[in-house]
Image (cartoon, rainbow, N blue to C red; front, side):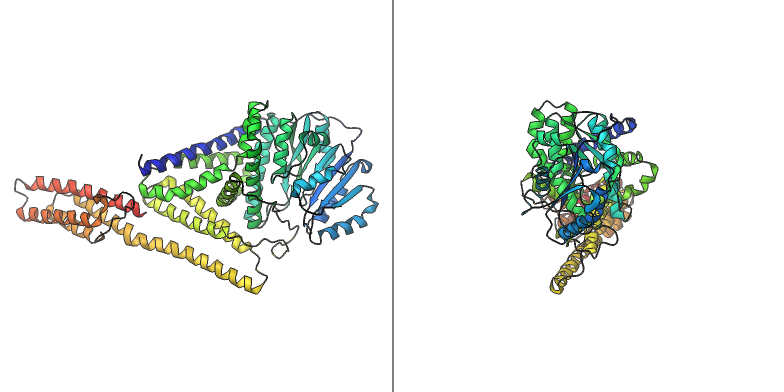
Length: 604
């Protein structure tokens, strides 16, 4: 198989495999749409059971007071309620918690403030520690940046009490800052599609449904029967899989919603996405073999497989993106890629419309955000596959007001410069793909290029500006050095185009004109003009070079044809050999034009 054949086969295979996840999303969207009004069964509750609220905390000075206030204001019998705060903080968050509890001791609610000696097990370890002192029959879990509505517990518990095999109830997340910026709007719509398409469909069809880590209530017996919380980065998904393997089920409720923050900083968003991608693959490695051997229904098995591997398409897309410049150089057709990319965009657009026409204005921002995570999430998938150990890197929360000058702003990661470079390469690939008529490649590389540059530039823009002067000076130099490298790469490519491909394209046009006339004198003139734009020597083919793309030999052939055309012109049109000689020259010009374009395709 030729190199172009190999490239085409790999890109086609990756596109087809990736379509499996998209097809599943379309199926779930149809299920969600046609079963939109179908709610699970609930019961009327007269005697509310004991319930514990678990609050894992690590350095949350800006949001912890807001959360605790909301928790203590929940409409639930105070003598039946217990709040367990597991606090691993290393800053003044612990002091804020203690001061709040002192000033609210009159509420009559049992509140336990646990301090661990280490962050062993991270969030999973904190939640497991909370079980040690839990007295509630049910356990609600809230992350620090969420604000449960007052009637949350009384609206959720009836669904758990209606069925003894329901192990947990997950509600839809709302967004406290979802409309603050393009970044937060893109994330908000992406999350809304997850809940209102995937979670709604799986719940209504009785398929596997994962707990999302917060804003839900567990049956204590389900957690215990499933083996408790284990130290995975996606501890919520991991426990959900084990619960299903034990015969439990999880329900999704679109209402009440529980609002929380989405990361307003690009580095924070990338960190959260990285953790989710890594964690899902980690869970898949640990449990997929057991899932396939289990007695779970085929539908739930498929959903577990696709959910734990849902970030693999990021890796596939990155590979395709890296192969695209080579595909353009080799002239690999792009029709199939255009069809796949168009289907993906149109499907996502139609699914977004299911949330209402007003959400369509956020669709470009979601596409921008999702695509901007290509390198970030592909890297997470690779690290998870190869078992690179990762600690739990928390997503910083900033609360109300401006966040840029607050303590938890993340520093710039070197990955941002790689995103800028890859984005610039993608944009250049789109440019040359368009010139050569490969519109499929031009379409998705344009979106990828814009998105990756968006991720890199926003990361730089959001990076903290204050701090140690020496480090700040070094960071500034590095930043502008990388920007200069990207600019140089773009300008070099444009210059290279103007000096090589553009000239070869002009030469090709002159040869086509020469092949379209039957006047030997005109043919000679067109050959002269073509020779002015063809390099004197060189062979751009770096794999299996042949005389077909050797410029010196091409020029030699053209000069021979030029001499022959001049000789025919002197001989005159009335001779018997004139037309025959002109036809031979014209055939040769078409052949040489093909050679020139073959060489041009190697340049770009």
